[in-house]
Image (cartoon, rainbow, N blue to C red; front, side):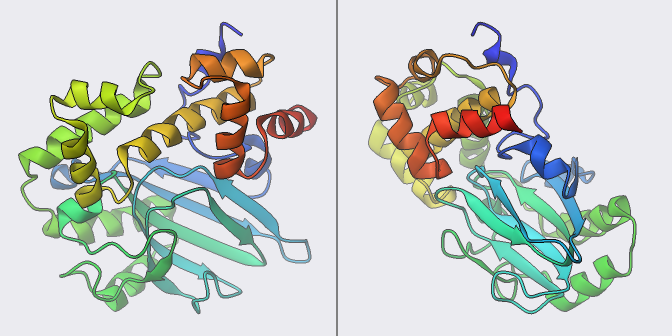
Length: 283
């Protein structure tokens, strides 16, 4: 039990449920933005591709960060009810992100930092939705971006196209956003933060002021974001093979007992911690 705390050290798989299982189906790459102006707003670019021709669909699940993603998507079948190819904006996901990978497909995307889409001037879509880009980020031409990305075959080159398209749109980051971004990074990294009043004290503001700040930039409450990060820690610990005592894991992450932890885990992840642990062991 003592070594589980290192299970979330790899940022490339944080939030991805059953990463080893998913890696056997789809290749995933991630890299940081190059343009300095974008670094306060865009956390990383990521790309994924798969070929399941003649094979059953695979359900990919991510315990998502409270972030907006901008994606360029191609595939043999429509995705999210949209004909492909297309440029999509994915709103903040309130629980877990689920997509059934079918046929062939490829995605190149920019994952914005929590609050980064709004701070850049973007209009976020409704939570849990994926919609065409049109009108959601002034100054970004969806047709031109789609053509430029699809003209490149290499994942690095496609990410460079996104970087070049987004860089001119990056404003001077507001101090309030920079403070919020630093706070969110602390919330993700510090497993000792388990209550909203702790976060408010760390930020030097009242709980209601903190709630308004999150509502304006992130689109989720500080309580929901904090729970998301701790549940990511829990899933990563289980996937890392470091957990034998679910009750101890629950208490160490701030839950009153295993029953409350199990309820919250199932509400967001879709299965109980014990079922998730059993599947991880079986995998």
